[in-house]
Image (cartoon, rainbow, N blue to C red; front, side, top):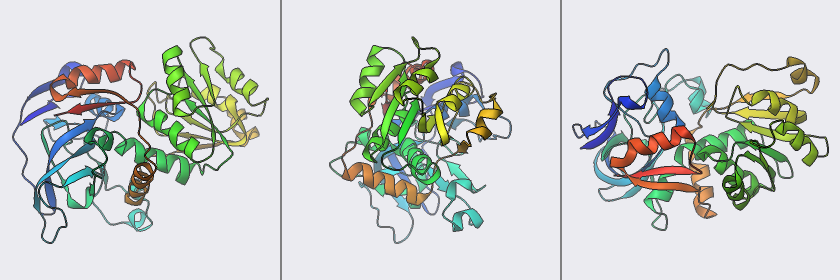
Length: 343
């Protein structure tokens, strides 16, 4: 089968588009023909690697997969060949105190498709049957794949960790990526007011189209926290969603209201944070980390998106053969919304 993979960690030149053996489903697994797979910054981080990450090489990335079942190696499964499915990228491999509390993503045995296991940047992928969910006939494969990882991430981040409530104000730091664009959509659907931080007229217009009530262009407002305070009449916002990291956390801390929350699920521009701790304790700010979510989080957000016909923005749909070029587009931050590959 054709696949995008790497045999050594490193920069984008480590990626190859070539043939690998087609996988065979183990007991309890299904073989899925990939019809669409969306990109995430996770794919970049996994390729570059980090201390403690040990993969079976060659490794195939890709967490967001929709497709059709080819075969099922599980007795009594309700899924049959030809079924249209999406795949929950959070894979449980253990039964422990966290999974029993429904906190799946806190479990040491929690794995992510395309991170610790081979993912969907290929024509076929094998996954546990427990991770299969039916894709409504009314939803395209591309629209089905786009919100999977970011949907689970946003749902837990906003509602289970930051406890977003109707009437609150949310600042989204950077509006172009998949998590942040879906954050705008979900926060608006929950009755919150959204301020988006982005750059350029085109991305600003797209943020407005998603439902942002105000947009700040950080390329012209370098001290953008002052603009946030102007828009909120000096109060600040209830929640800041900051997945940029070291470059933005200091101003996020100045943008949040007293008793407010800053929530983060990533760090696209640096993970070593430095900020004025006096602001953290005098304003009594909660700094909250979040990662992925539970199986129930996945079910809830997918049902919410499908029932309310909420479509996450898709920047580009490209063939798998153009995948390395599309990953470069992701790394350069030229996209708005999700980039999707169609094998």
